[in-house]
Length: 418
Ligand code: GLU
Image (cartoon, rainbow, N blue to C red; front, side):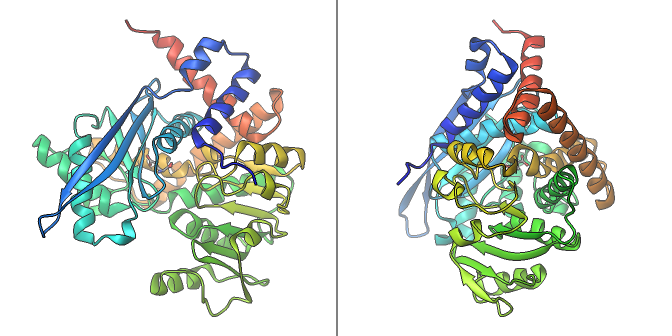
């Protein structure tokens, strides 16, 4: 048995690797490995029967050198202080990788949202938003959706903030519904950047997405859109999964039909056009051209990494590989295209949403998608150029080299205060 990796330690290791490639001073590196501050709070919500329930929640503001803290809020029973710290750090380097003017933050509530009604979730969300109010703002810290949160929660956060502040400030949070100030294309953005990264990656490797076989772990917002857009680009999606298990069809799954099945039944399992059902580990070790982990951290550990048969991995989830898995896959020549580029479409279109909110001028979906494509393709070129010019073992370290350099430059330009 291998020990479960601590995501915060994984983040620090990734920063160290890039710091070594850049020959950065230890004191600067040290500063970039820790959050500036972490809010830990206990939300107390009163139910209709008068009983009280307590929920632990966090918001980590990791680094603000390049702009306001930015990043999602997740609702999950496994949320922890270290997980939130790691996720907030990954946001710093993600925003820097794609060159958008934000720092990084992340929040979470320790909760299984499936156990609560919509009304209960609204009270919990508003309690968190009230607690967050002094720390967030259009120019301070801008939350967004993450695992198990979406437009609904963002609309509640915006409304709570605006009510308490007696103002309108739609850019205090992104990922809102359209009529609440959301952007066209935001819901699809994470899956879209995953597809764009896969397309650029395959071209770089001298291959084509058209005709490639793909397995996708996780059929939430990011996973299903990535699968659907890759199918539209001619790929064959042979297997997809969710927390209940995986389905497989050698000649390709109809991603839209699988989505309808999941909407109707709550799971991909039982889809009538599947040849067989697989365990999650079986999906992750299928002999496919492209594997897309689109679920949670640590999906592939050292042990599983030895079994992976895919030629390339594009990370739609945050932190799906442990550092030891990364080492194994590097050694085995599996090309891994990292989360901080591949799933950066979400925060990139959040940035577009925030720009539109502040200008009170809204773009159509074509413009959003075109601007997103420019950002991701440019970032991919930056990644490849770092990969080719620095002594780095893989694309992840190359990505951190690009990102770290940008954060360090902003820090050095600003200097320290006091
Ligand atoms: N939660 C998403 C991420 O991990 C989006 C963050 C955002 O839009 O600020 O990148």
